[in-house]
Length: 241
Image (cartoon, rainbow, N blue to C red; front, side, top):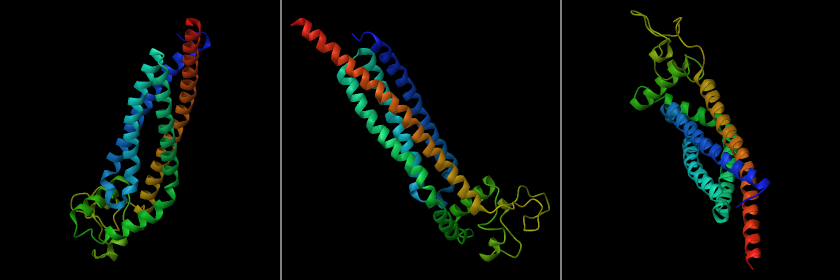
């Protein structure tokens, strides 16, 4: 049995494992929300953007399972289980830290990605139903119109001063959505979409790095507990001989 101050470490390790389980759920929730919220924008983003939240969901599931394993090791004071848990947690820590840094660093790729995707899809608005839905969702949700301005729609073949209905907050009966409407969104989609993606990159990075730091503390507690348990075993074996 673990004695003295290490009894405190044992229960602290158990508590941290409960916290890890919660962080796993947080990872799953954040990743899922980002996928759901930005799923309609898939035509404007490269696959690597969606790889980050998917990775969060996978890591969250692994963290939840590993934390349960750690709880069992702490309660049973099983040296092998605690060491295995510490190694797994260390690997997850490295993965989360890497994902967090990648989430932060990918902000630098956003401008080029958004510009390229908006350019290539805007020209297909009238001929591709999937792209038209994506543009309508984006303009409505981000309250924007056109890539750089509402006049962009004229450049791709729309009649002069005409824009998609999604460019307007509302279209009163008998009215149309055009560049002269008081209901038209005045922001450009390039800036709004880029800002939204960068915000979520920061969230991904912040959550990943923040939770990784918390888990590092848990690794230290687990290692202290494993060392204490091993010493107890050695003491018992020595006394037996």
